Length: 234
Image 1 (cartoon, rainbow, N blue to C red):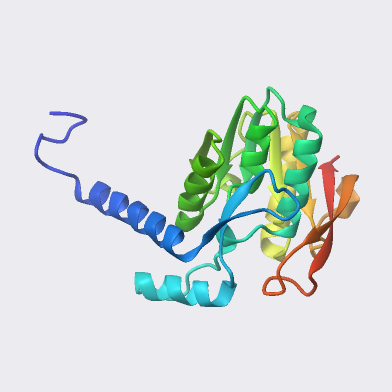
Image 2 (tube, one colour):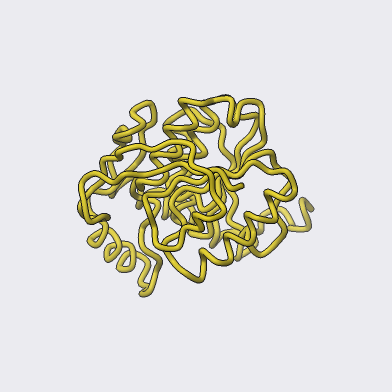
């Protein structure tokens, strides 16, 4: 016996999970290209050329409709700004334990490790994002740990810093997130947010740290350059 499973037998749920992880890994590698991030060329990500075709292909490959958009396949403006700020101001994370919340591609978490963080956990509830984080972290030789839990379902973790790249685009999520981040701040956690001016950003609770003009794709945004700011939750 090993871990409660007899030798020669494989737990069905575990086998399906492993197969799913391998499938997502292969899908990402086959349908993206490893490219330097425009505002953060020190980091390369596996990115897609277009969002909608990749979204449809993901659904077709899995035989499942209604999957979340492939947020993991792009370097979003807020995430690029936050990653740039961290690399230019490494003291924000150096020697600290860090949570990269709703990590997507893993860009911000990778930047934190490159800036000298003691450890980084990149959290995302999308299985494809978890695979993308693993692939991108390996490509950048960054030791990032991924986590598939919905962090907002529990109290903020015991970390030194929480990084949030471009997550205030939906009202219901933004309200829940702002309350959770306020609790984290009250516990002494340093919260940094990268955002290109999304509708539900709680500006009245934030202090501006930096501003960047970020190159983005028209497939994602309404302009080729998005002014994005880095904020500290006050």
